[in-house]
Length: 441
Image 1 (cartoon, rainbow, N blue to C red):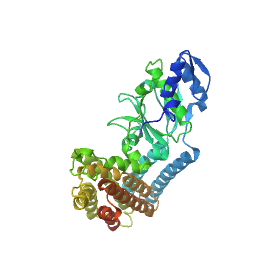
Image 2 (tube, rainbow, N blue to C red):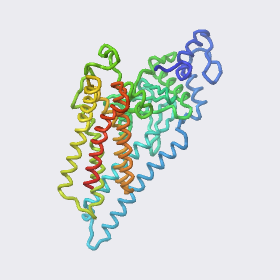
Image 3 (cartoon, one colour):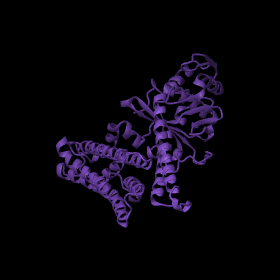
């Protein structure tokens, strides 16, 4: 669905609603929501007026959301540093201890946990980044200060509408040759995880939950047009409204995501709307399995950190590493296995299963579970109770099974009972991974 003129685009300078006003009165233009006349389309005056009215140019998420995210990230970081420090002190207090005494597997587990916690904490913190708009560029909040990106280095905005939740998601991409100063891995990681960025691209992902969101877009579009040398802002050249961010859509609007994943060409459907041929998109297996490898590494990271942290009470043996490899292989096999199960249900119930479409779909459906497992690994790495990580993993298993069930029902137009055949297969395979983890630890 495209953005409607009455909601977002009409509030932007140069949007459809404002262009009609400018056409009706070519000498006097009116700023949206401000009401002060401007003589001619003076873009610099527009940006200055908007900037003055935009709460000093700083845009943040609601205080409760921002505070909650920072508390969670802070607790994880503090807990991991405390655990690392206490373990180091315990080792150094032993008689005859030296710096070399710190080179133990338990210490390695704490360091690995600290790395995981650092990544997860940075992800949480940057997921709710504040923005600052100035004539010099767009500021993105960081742990210490602001990162400034000049307007000429910002590309076309990508907007995805989420009608069911009355929310918009916007990707503010940085041009590939842009230098962003100090390393900013989250500027690349978060957009790619959400499916908003192209390969090698960086940027910042925001939602309409930001306070004064429309005013923020007014400012950004004004400065982008000014940097592009446009006398009058042209929304079509500055904003791409037809964008889908797969994982973000799955998280915020699973119904729309499942409709997209199961959509097929009418030419390949029978009278009842069920596809009679596996004509899904071609699969580039190296690319697909590289993504599945990242997903499969979640349980491996969780088990490895757990084993290393408890090495003092239960020493690691070579068999543990064999089980880690087995867990990784099982994680890789999960994708083609579940796709075959879903295909088998289609063959049995409607006469033709969809394998290729399901491979790509299940790759997305696992994303929420993978995130929860990695958060669980960070929780264990921070020295918090392992039960928290296990609950997160189990919640991810139930969520993936639920999404897979809805996917099968929508793909084959099936009632719940026959779709449960795929649900059982999906659940059993995920549960087997969890059982291996519990048994080995």
